[in-house]
Amino acid sequence: MNPTRTERLDTVDSTNVEAMRRAVAGERGPLWIMADVQTAGRGRAGRSWTSEPGNLQASLLLTLDTAVSRAYQLSLVAGIAVFDAISAGLGASPPGLRLKWPNDILIDGQKAGGILIESSTTPAGLAAVIGIGINIASAPDLPDRPATRLADHGFAGDSGALLAEIADATRIWIAIWENGAGFEVIREAWLNRAHPIGERMSINTGSERIDGAFLGLDTEGALLLDTPSGARRFTFGDVSLSR
Image (cartoon, rainbow, N blue to C red):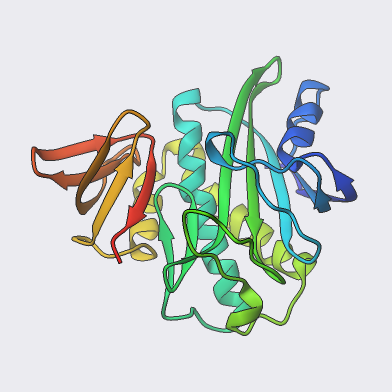
């Protein structure tokens, strides 16, 4: 991988959108684009993402030599990197720090951050963008789930310091992932940082809501859930942990 560069912007509509614009224009990365403020930040399923000053909003643009179908595994890769970076920034992992499939970072069941993966085929190859948003100084008032901020858990750094930790960890885990060839290591690492096997949860796929118990991830990274109708596999959906 070429050396990773970082560009910090005062304001942008969306770091993911800006990264993809760069990819269309011929940028291959790896390039981190960080913004102090986003005016049109986005989360999964087209949700808006609140981007307050003092929080982290950044996207990594990569050009990959792998199938489009494997790009979503980057959500798990990035989750591990963010988990490790937060742990490093706090000096130790808070007891309640967990990853929730497919893209959430939780502390004591409250959302501290999220990840959005987008990809597009370009003449240079598969452009993948890893968007990361972390609540550092403030947390939004979410209608469907509680949120928290790192400042409430002892994090004294700023967004630049956290991005430096995330960038270092991401570089390590991207190399381990190796365009999907090393996914089994990623899978085990993610499970070691996630909620426990057997935890009750539900998933909303848009067409149905299914309750069950967490069985882990399959060899491709899909969610496995023990449901009343038996074990089921999910490649998309919003997961809620039982409280």
